[in-house]
Length: 157
Picture 1 (spheres, rainbow, N blue to C red):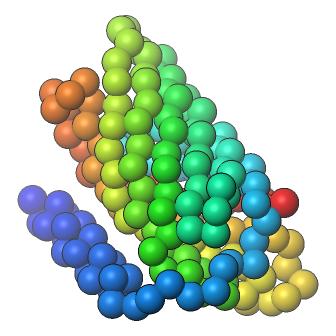
Picture 2: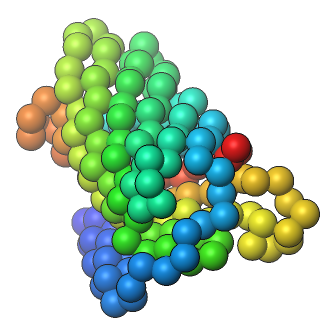
């Protein structure tokens, strides 16, 4: 119970922190990226990830995952960047997908996160971004609800 309370407090803090600032300059990353997105939850996708920036403040992401135990997922996410700085962005996301294990089902969820371009540490680094987000995922309507912590990295081009 304490763990879920801390996650809720973290989400509220990130939302308040990000909402108190206006949108800044676009990140210096490329328009597309390929990488790995992990998921620290029972349901949800973790695996190969593709991301495409439609606009400076909006991206779509596809995650193709294998969760072990015969579970496979395909998930799509829409990311809206509400805070943009030179090397990092704050974003909110909505997601939907399907899973298969012994049967086929539907996943949906959302949350908030931060993405950082490693070239902010050293200009000679490759165009790699790392991200971390926290959110929630529901399975088959509201049958099963799970809090998620995700991390990932993408090579941007």
